[in-house]
Amino acid sequence: MSLEPNTANKTAWGRISRDGLWSNNVVLGQSLALCPLLAVTGTATNGLGMGLATTAVLIASGFLIALIRGWVTPEVRIPIFVLVIAVLVTLVDLGMNAWLHDLHKMLGLFIPLIVTNCAILGRAESFASRNGAGASAFDGLMMGLGFTLALVLLGAVREIIGSGTLFANASLLLGEGMAFLEMTLIPDYRGFLLAILPPGGFIALGFILAGKRLIDTRLAEAQRRRESTTGTGALA
Amino acid sequence: MSLLAVLNQRQSIAYQAVLLGGFTLLAAVLLVAGNLATHETIALRKAEDLKASLSQVLPPALHDNDLLADPLTLPGADGAPVVVYRALRGLEVTGVAYRVSGSGYSGLIELILGVDPHGRVLGARVLSHAETPGLGDKIELAKDDWILAFDGLSLADPPPERWAVKKDGGDFDQFSGATITPRAVVGALKRGLEFFQRHQVALTAPAAVSAASDPVRSPE
Image (cartoon, rainbow over all chains, first blue to last red; front, side, top):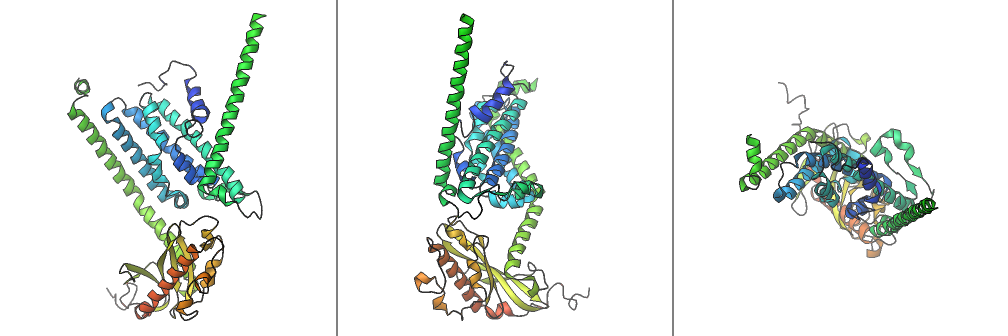
């Protein structure tokens, strides 16, 4: 069993990172997992907590599924993947309830929803069942971080516009040492309800998706221009 | 190699069944282990939560007992049992607290209500709700001190028919943009006080002398 990604490509690790964090990002690239995304991103802290919990499940499910992929036949693979993911999520749920209780009170409702996060089964099916355990765990890490990035970004935008704060209650998640993250950006702000409600989530997500598209277009254009310049240089 | 032989028959129903069954068994074992490892800590955390909310409606100055010890269970108006936590000083009841609930704009609003032996509200706090943020969530003390307006009130003051929001001819403020939520809270608290009235004798009777801590009854 090789720990290397299947592809002979030397930059495979780099490509997995790039895929997970940016070009094939769960939310920004694949538009998956929108239900947990919109449900928890009322604040950046909730987004961070949900993102980290999902990342833990993604890493573990990628690793385990890559380990067992040799035994699992295509006919029964889906029930087995679902079983693995459901067990992992239940264990994360129990662990958080016991040891991160305050965060669990905020996110408790959404943790079981990780099971229904199509991105996790999607990665199991499209990556972990075809690659080594190390590469799959790494893919889980990168996909999870990409998801966390999207959650925190959307949570931050909605929290700033909706309540004028950033990372409120972060000390519940990260410990008292991180209390400095809790910022009130707009004092005496009366709040903007729409941003916190689900429609605000859709609107903010729309702007973020548009922003990513814009950056991608700019990058592609710059790339093309660079290629044409070097092309002309070679001709001259 | 027998493993190879088995792997060669991967298409057989038996292999698939054993595979699925084996994984299910493994999953069950893991879940049992996870539950065993966490259930004590979780029970502890839940007790802490309950104690924290009880202490908001039963001030520590009122009692010298463990609020979670020896609760009463009485039938509520709908027949469902209501667990009542008692604040005791010695054996005398100085307050009781129990959960009440009302149907809000989006689902159940759960509150904890503390009542003194004369039927006056010691305090009320929302335990859980799913009301609209920014409109209905003013029932939380963290967002607004509306809920404090109930302190000291009873079914005698104001009279029962005035236990309603102003829009319904009662005494209590509704919020602009949200009437259903405060109406549900006022209704829940009124029902809670009616529950107290119905069971006042049982609720305020001195704690049974059979309490485990009683030195007289436990000479062994």
